[in-house]
Image (cartoon, rainbow, N blue to C red; front, top):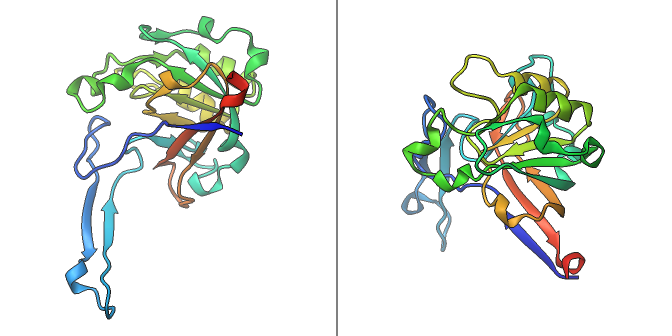
Length: 222
């Protein structure tokens, strides 16, 4: 059976800046190859000092709700082999509930918002407060539709120019993880693909970088 895999995560590199007012990751060498002690071979051990919101990352309920699940406690059924429904919202800054269509089609799905903002990745424009975002009514509709996960290829699901985060509060309060700063959503079909998005199972963190991919059964589209 023929399958395609689409990379949905931005790579992480030393010093990169993505989220405003947060430090970039520091990737350093803990044990260099010329100091490794094995006979006949060398090795390196690197270390990374980073905040959870680095690159493409996932938010767990604990991020906004102290009693909620942390990254290690996220249910795997929300992260592995989840059917994707793409929502096309390119050119729309304020994304309203009208883009969702029939809520029945969203039940149990990973709902990914394609805004096109990832094309600005690596530029100062990417961190601009004018990035696309979802209004709170969208989050309420997604909670009512019992979605498994919500993702976006923009800086944030909420309007970062305001001190409120209604989408984070509603989605995470309902146990629905959020993935932000995705990429390549233009390569994912509207339906038929499946999501795999697995962070390292770290306790005590509400956000963590994630390797997200969509896999597509090409025979379905052939």
